[in-house]
Amino acid sequence: MISPRNVAFGLGSSVGHGLSEGQVDQLAAILTALTEDELAPTTVRDPARAAAVHLADSLIALELELVRAAASIADIGAGAGFPGLPLAVALPHSQINLIESRARKCEFIERTRMAAQIENAEVICARVEEWPEGIGAHDVVLARAVAAQPVVLEYAAPLLRLGGALVDWRGRRDSGEERVATETAELLGLRRDLIRRVEPYEGVRDHHLHIYMKVRETPDRFPRRAGMASKKPLVT
Image (cartoon, rainbow, N blue to C red; front, side):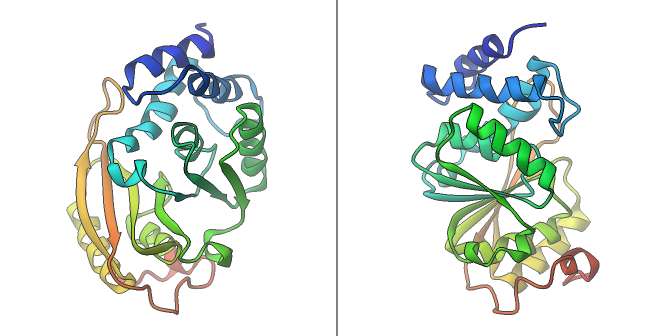
């Protein structure tokens, strides 16, 4: 098996994001955690595969100027720490909050953060609807494989400052879900800006970043009680 460090250095030279040797070492530490920590919440253990589906897929957001310029970023439903941890490495000027409700995943993210010496990231072990400190505090909210897009929009909108943006990782486009998402966004003070097709690693198909801008303040009734976004959608 190729070592995580060699894979990370290969990634650092190929993704074109101007990462320093120290930053690539930090990415290698993330890969090591994924491949060697028995409690890592992922089925992807091979370093080369993990570098593609986790690291490269996270770093593709650097193609967006609004992500590169963000001072405060929230990663909702952070899972094993993606996309937040790799982006914290790549964006040392940004403060990144990784929001995850499951304690076991929070513990893994924190172990990985410490092992990789990532100082500009913080793990928030809470449901996103139950984190009042984050309301209106972020330039960008990230969501990767979290929930249906209308649900993600409802999670993200309260966390964004006016003028901020949601970046939502999606696969194949679905016109029906996009219609519902557009109507949901309108109720939350959001507006879809663009859908960008991306190819973060070789062989990936139907991969898109959906960007929504916060154009009006989100009504005070949001966030709703935990679980309501999925149980009682705003638009059907």
